Structure formats: structure tokens, C-alpha cells
Amino acid sequence: MKDKGKRSVDDRYSKWKTLVPVLYDWLTNHNLVWPSLSCRWGPQLEQATYMNRQRLYLSEQTDGSVPNTLVIANVEVVKPRVAAAEHIAQFNEEARSPFVKKYKTIIHPGEVNRIRELPQNSKIVATHTDSPDVFIWDVEAQPHRQAVLGTTASRADLVLTGHKDNAEFALAMCPTEPFVLSGGKDKAVVLWSIQDHISTLAAGAISSNTPGPGCSNVKHASHAGGANDSPRIGPRAIFRGHKDTVEDVQFCPSSTFEFCSVGDDSCLIFWDARTGPRPVVKVEKAHYADLHCVDWNPHDANLILTGSADNTIHMFDRRNLTSDGYGSPIHIFGGHTAAVLCVQWSPDKSSVFGSSAEDGILNVWDYEKVGKKQESMGLKLPNAPPGLFFQHAGHRDKVVDFHWNASDPWTIVSVSDDCESTSGGGGGTLQIWRMLDLIHRPGEDVLAELDKFKSHILGCEES
Image 1 (cartoon, rainbow, N blue to C red):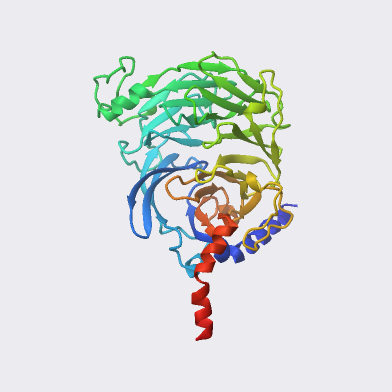
Image 2: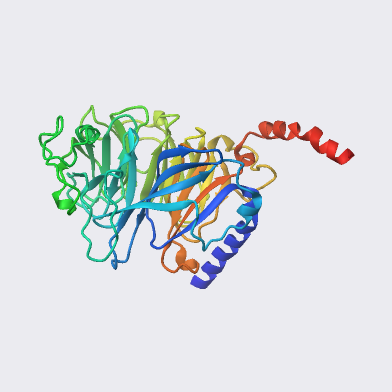
């Protein structure tokens, strides 16, 4: 059965590879020495004529022979309609991309399961590992460390305490205030404010023994040494209502105090910090299996996505949910054949979102296309479920994480643990890609653009 499954993946991959020149505006592949469980875009550093330079954060999950690391890379992001078709056609799944260059490594106290950047200052990131603590890092101030056996962990700039058991995956940053949200195996959702700490960083006092403004309860330390010597702060509030591990959390994009969480109890819970630590709305059976991920639409605060081990994505309208937990999804998206691991709304169009799963596929959906004819520029997806208009099949194994680029429209970074399927042997794969704009643009816009070249084409034929 395993050989049959591998043949199926190889066949799917081979078919996808033949379509790369007609599906993508840009695609680059970067084999990783170690698998990465999380990837996030950082700040844009430089804009140029044909490329923009940008930070990228990712993890390295090692086998213990060397320490786990948080990697800060510089990426040259090729602008739309710049990459030549022949360059895209030469895509090589065994290559290390010339566009991705490691800038700095931070020795992490355990594997990096999740990375989230602070929207108010994307040089500040939070990480989860297999422990109850959340680590806060100023990635620019942190020194570069070599990952060699026996090296002690880098000192986190701040450690957030409050969980009673491991908090491994559920992690979010508030879009409007420096608040951090986490969920864990203790079934709790924990909220912190790092406002005072961010103020201290801005004042350049992180390595001083003198506390910054409002930080009288925080002990400052230098970067040399382990995470145990880092300044630590407790939670602002703890919220209880789940009956099993909390797997993901997300802030409401339009409210500082509202957020939601999902877990292995199949529940989707909405919270409001102003009303206390109990659920505001609790949807008992958001799915009929464990929930792995949740995302809140940044353009429309009524729409929430959830992804589950039942292979589906549910879209909820919170206006349809009541305090007794009544409510059903307004649509179920069923295009994956394995557990959904990540869902994320696009920053570029309010109705578009992506989903990745253990089936090795990253799907791109548009709920406005539900009920409409499923085709785009003549490229039809056979038996496509409603709303699905693009499939990225460049990974050979589960796509554990992806992130839309807010600085370069329609550009996505995705990571998978799939180098065992190639000659890499045990590592991971990072890909940065952007679909051809003719695929996602409205048909009338595409036809209008093509019409501009009509006289030129006809003139060439006459000559």
C-alpha cells in the first residue's frame, strides 16, 4: 500500500510539474537540511526594480545531533511578470534556491513548532516549543549563533509563563495591540500583554540591569546564556472552556479584546476579555473530529475558517451563532484527502483563502466562486469542489505551514517535510511561489488586457 501511495504522489507531482510554466508567475524551491514546522514573512528590507528583499522566519527541526534553531533568512522576492518562462520551466525539486540566503540563526530551547510576528513590530517574534512557556525574540538584537552539538540555547528576550502543561502550536499576535495569545495541553487559552517589554526594547534597554518604564517586575539580562535566565512575565488573563488540547487561537482583526480558539474537543469558542474568562459563544461540534487550525477574515470580521482532521474546512458567520452554541457552517469546503493543518485568509482579496493538509496539497479557494462555473483561463480542475480555483502540488508530503506575503501580492511561502521523497534524505522543502495573475484576476480584466495587444498581433500577421 505504501508503494502504491508513493506512486500516486509521484504521478501527481509529475503531472503538476509539466504545468509549472503555465501556472506560475514565479516559483523557487529551497531544500532544507532539516524539516521546518513553521514559516513566516518578516519585514520588507529593500525595494528594487525587479526584486524586493524581505526577511523570512523559519524553523529547523533537528534529530538532536545539533541544536534546534530559529532561522532568519533574507529572500529576494522576484516581482510579478519578471521571471522568464524558461527559468520557471527549469524548476528543480532538489535545488537550494539562490533567492534564499540564511542571515542569522538563533539557538532555540527545543524544536520550533510555531512562529508568529508582532504586527506592530515584525522584528519581534513569538515561538512555541514542547514546553508550557512562550518565547519572545528580538531577532535583530539577537546575536548569530552556530548550531553545534553542546551549544547552549540563546537567551530569549522574554519568557511568557502561565500554562500548566505544554503549549505547542496555538499561538497568535494581536493586530492592533502588543498582546500574545496561546493555547495548550492544559486546555487553557492564555493572554499576555508585552507592551512594557516592547517599550523597553525600543529604548535599547534590553541588556541593561535597569528596568525600563513599567517593567519593575521584569529582570533584564544579557543575551549570553540559556532561556532560564530570561526575564519572565505572567499572564494578563486565563480563559477556560475547552475539554481537550487547544490547537489554535486567533484574534479578531477589528477588536483588541475578542478572539477565538479551536481544539481536540471539536469545539470552536469565542471569547471577550472584557466579559471575563468564560466563553461568549461555544460551538460544541464545529467539526466531527479534532480541529487543527482557525483563521479570522481580516477584511470581514464576521467570517471565520476552521480546518480539521476530518479533511474539511468550515466557514462560519459569527452572526449566525448564539450563546448556547447553536450554529452551523455557512459552507463546507471538501477538497483535501487528509487532515487540514493550516488555513489562512488572503491579504489581497477578502473572499480568497488558502488551506494546506497532510495530503501534500495547498489549495487556494474563493468563496465567491461557490456555485459558479469552475474554470480559470481554460485550465479546468477536474471534479473540483465548489470554490477551489488553484492547487499547488509542488510538495510531495504534508504541507505543515504556509504564509501569504502582505508586501508582495499573491506570493506564498510553504514548507513541507518531504525531502525523503527526493534525494535530499530527511530534510524539508521550502517553496516560494506566485500563481499567474491571469488565473485569479476577473475574466473581463484579462480580456481587456489581451485586447490591448490585438492590433499588434494582427499587424504582425499582416506583415
